[in-house]
Picture 1 (cartoon, rainbow, N blue to C red):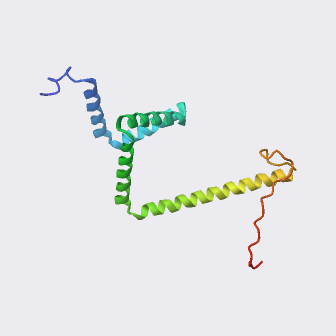
Picture 2 (cartoon, one colour):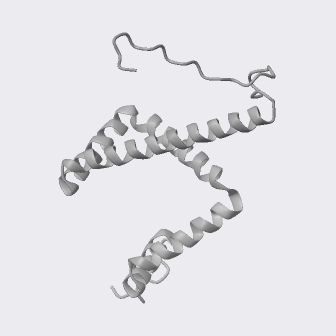
Picture 3 (spheres, rainbow, N blue to C red):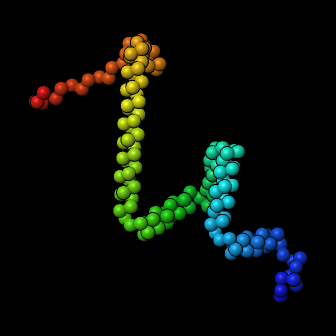
Length: 150
C-alpha cells in the first residue's frame, strides 16, 4: 500500500513517530539533543531546579513501586560493569582519588573560613553566635606526647 491508500488510517502516535523519524533523518540526532537542552534550560528558568528534583523523585518512586528496589541494584550493577569494561578497572580508583582530593580541599576551605570568622569575631570582641558568650573561643591544645623531642 502507498501512503495515499493508507491516508486516514494512521493513529496520532504513528503520525508523530513517522514525523519524528523524518526529522531525525533530515536533521540528525544532534538536532533533538540541541532542542532538548534548550527546552530543559527554559523549563529550569521558569520552574526552577526543584521542579526537576520533584519529578525525578516521583518517577523514581513510581519505578520502585512497579519494579521493586532490586531493580535499581540490578541496573546499578549493569552500569558499573559497563563503565568498568569501557574505561578499565583503574577508572574507579582514579575518580575515587579525585573525589577524595576534592573533599579534602573543601574541608580545608571550610576550616579556613571558620578560622577567619572566629578571628574577625575575636577582633570585634564577640564570640560566635552559637556560643552565647562574649569571650573568644580558643580550640583546646593537644597534650605533649611523652618522650617527644620538643
